[in-house]
Each structure stands twice: as structure tokens, then as C-alpha cells.
Image 1 (cartoon, one colour):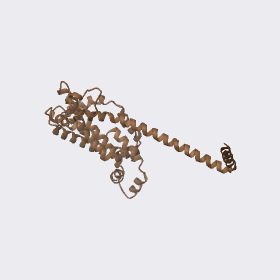
Image 2 (cartoon, helix red, strand yellow):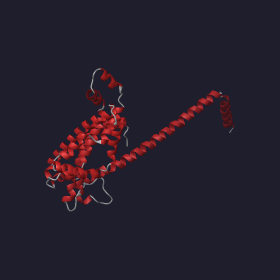
Image 3 (cartoon, helix red, strand yellow):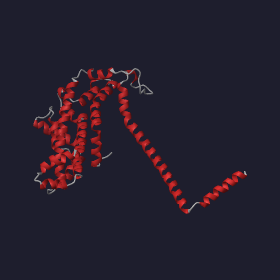
Image 4 (cartoon, helix red, strand yellow):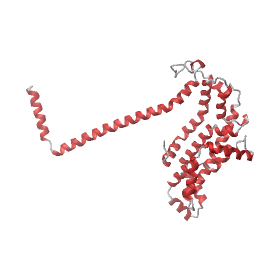
Length: 313
């Protein structure tokens, strides 16, 4: 007891012997440790929320793949079995062959429409965006607002006039209605590319004009090489749109030989009295793979383009 009292007295004596500056250092150290613990806690909560939201967004895709591997008896089993036994890999083959459709022909049609649509929208939208971002002409801002206002029009409002127009032009049941309009630009892509072009220093244009370069040469030699992330973002958005689009092929195409993969996928419910959901999910998994592969190889450019143009979420 006496020893503990003497030890406490010595410790209190040491505390009193500390200089005022030492108390300041100790206080700063404690504040730094407290701040570090707060930052660690904040990061832990942030990562936990991101992982939870990421898993919630991934859940439908996992359910699709799991259902694609199930036999018929386990599709609606309760509780659901995420890892069925056995795994029925033949569902993927049956999904492509059971309806007797020429899936390879649909895949070719979809690739043609998607590739030509992506090329057209990338070229035309970048040209229009260059004009809005780098050229001076009367009414430029008003015209740009008019282009942006077209994004607010519901798609179903314009589809009927387009159908009548393409019918008079004799373009129905061809790929032209699905490709040609996108060679005249798309408002969203024009807006995205304009925002990116505005971030490129205007001094580059001035230097090129001093050397005698024309506006088209500046667009071709300076702007486009510096805009790869934004162009990749536009290309991925356009490819996903054309690959998954069901409405326009359903309205403008009538011959089965001109069908796209989206129409083939929709035919599962139309041709079967009781859709086999495992086959439908197997076909959906196969048709999703090209989009996933494209995003996997272009994700760095895609994320860079979204970050630079400020279009997030």
C-alpha cells in the first residue's frame, strides 16, 4: 500500500515537473490519434456501405446466372438455392436451339446495327459538339439549349412520326431506321462531348490557327486525339443501347431474318405457353457477355471519360 502511494506520488510529481510545452505536444498527439481513429471509422463505414450497395446491384445478375444453371424443378424452389445440384450446363445449348431460330443470323444483324450505329453517333456527335464548344457563331447557345431540350421528349412521342416518315421513304423492314438517324448526332452524346471539349485549353486552337490550320484540321488533329476517354464513353453507351434495344427493332423490323438478339430474347415468352425461365436466363446470360467483355477492356477509358466530363451516378 505504501509502495503504491509512493509510486503515485512520484508519478504526480513527474506530471507537475513537465513543462507547459510538453502538455501542448501531448494534446496534439492525442488529437491526432483521435482524428486518425475517426478517419479509420469513416473509411470502414464507407467501404461497408459501398460493398452492401455493390452486392445489392450484383444480386440480380447472380440470380440470373444461378437460374440459368438450374433444372426445371429448382427454378422456383423455396428457399431459393443459389448453388443448384447438379449444375445443368446444357441449358445454354438448349436456349440457343430449342426454338429452332437462326441465332447466328440474329447475332450478325445485331452486330451490324450496333457497330454502324456506334460509328455514326461518335462521328456526328463529336462534330456537332466541336462546333458548340470551339466555334463562335450567332445563336450558338440558343441552338445548344434547343438540342438539349430534345432530350426531354419521351421516346414514345417521336416513334410514331418516325414510323410514318420511314414508311413513306420505304425504309421499313430494313436496318436503315436503326442506323441512319444516329449519323446525325444524339443530344446526350453531344452534351457529353461538348463538356469534354470545353476542358481542353483554347490556346491549342490559337496556336494551330497561327500555323494555318483550319477548324476541321484542329478537330481532326488536336481535339479528337485528346478526347479518347470521352469518345470511348460515348461508344460504350451507344453500343449498350443498340445491343439491348427492343422497341425500335420491334416496330421497324417485320421479317424474321432481320431480327436482332433482343427480339429473339423476347420471343421466348411469345412462343412458349409456359416460359422455361432457366432457358430464358441462360439466353440472357449469353447475350450479356459481349457487353461485359467490352466494359472489362474499356473500363479505364470509360471511367476516365465520366470523371472528366463530370457525369457521375
